[in-house]
Image (tube, rainbow, N blue to C red; front, side, top):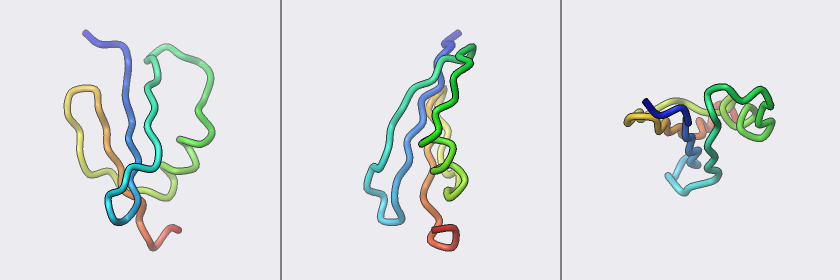
Amino acid sequence: MNNINSYRIYDDKLNLLYETSIGVYEKKKDVKLMKLLNKSRFFLNVDNLRCYRIDPMFS
């Protein structure tokens, strides 16, 4: 079992904006990731990789 979650955030044209990996048991939060997730919509999940796309309505 992989204990690392990877995240990719894309803009509305699917250009990669941000990519990070976070261990499941890490206590430190990635502030930039959290801000981007609040403006994004989930669109793809493959194994431990989650992809989000910026929603222009939230920007």
